[in-house]
Length: 298
Image (spheres, rainbow, N blue to C red):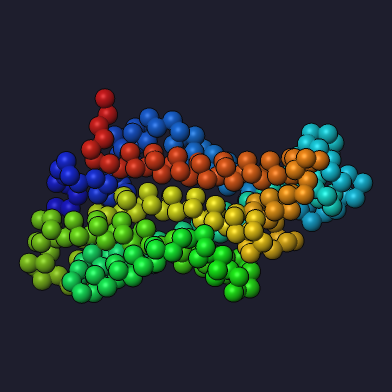
């Protein structure tokens, strides 16, 4: 027995397959904002991956005669920037960078957080207390100041930004996993595995972790949104992705001087950031409802 015995105090302890069963999928479909978020993420990802190949202009092509062209006024669909570069091409290429940073940072942060939370929750005692006190100490530092302090000391690049964001966003995941593992360890299936003499590694990775996947999936979805937003504001402040490589953050930074004369330079990347972050948050809310065993269909 694993996640079969659920009571009112247990939430988000269903395996990922629970999402695809009929009640779980219906709960997700009933969450209209989550469906909107999922569709938006798919469309945005496909546009960023495929779109640049379909456009007549690259993100580095300079049309000096079309500088500051407004959207929908000529061959450049969303207008051009101060150098005459196509805004749509730059938005899609920037989306590749920002989404890649978001997903990569999420994967690394989840790996670190899950491992720390799993060990701390299973062993508890001195080891678990020491790990969680380290997590608490890391959480004491405001993430924005920690990001800026570390980014000022390293050479900006996509890999370094990914590692930087991951290093400052795994602590919440560790706390979630630690709480879930401590609760699951007292369940009958875990106690049965211990009584049969299963190794600690088998109990942790074969018995406990699969039953804690649901909150991990939700946390991963929200972590992508956090990583995209973190990349945007450190790039906006000049410590992130550096031109000529586009990202939504450095596009916003370069548009500061033209807010009155060419507002679309800031509005368009701002809308891209808003859409992606809110979509991932909506999907996270929908998954939380779909995977929560206490939610019932009417």
